[in-house]
Image (cartoon, rainbow, N blue to C red):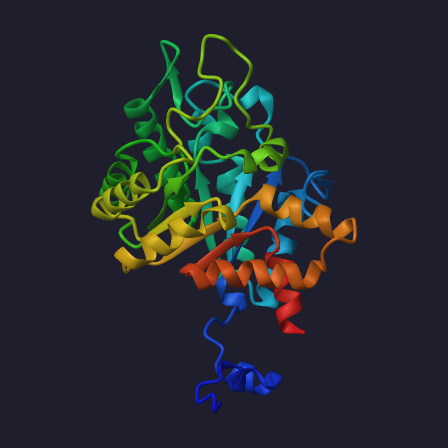
Length: 330
């Protein structure tokens, strides 16, 4: 029998496979999440995320310079906020001389071409560890939106290129867009966490920022009243389309690998850039398996990030950005 069609003909060598490769991963695809803390010339290892640190502002600037030299051109900023600066309304989040605002300015001064995407959410600044203001024991959606607008405008004033609301309040993209426009920041983009699920994969991140909801019977015990139910997929489409209509420039799907079906569905219906967050739990699982000798660390990193891009991502937020960049450059 003659077999006329043999798929293996295009797999016969590394050169042949490269010639027909459909998905190409580059350093331009990465956004590196960075944790910043108060102080000077200090860094603290995050036990649940090997290779990831909280750094003071001065060391954060050096890290950004190194990232840019490796080809990673965008960072996503998170602050470890002192307990004495936290309150219910997150007022420290729009302090013009706050740690976030000073960090944005310092990075822009040192690496002007670095794209800075500060996180917009109240949980690191909240005494309750929630992304929203608590009123009468519930998340106050509209009051939270007012705070998020102030936060976003303060980030823009400091030099942010894109603000990244991760809070999942209804209507916040339209509110932030209006606030930015009225303040003259017409060129500052919005990367909206449109389909952010209430996921168990966020644990290491919350320990890094001490931003988990506090144990208090008078407030919601988790974030399920505003983050999405992981059982749902059609709801994600609705969330995405609403954020697009409200003026989002980029939409985010979070987490990453367990939600590639959502990424693929969204890719089929919108033309805007899609960001995918390869979250802390995904990173921690890979690292744990590699440390036990169950996975090849380098190969698993590149494969996992490539599959996220293959599903439809235009950019990937990943704690492995620096490591992956070094691998790709080599």
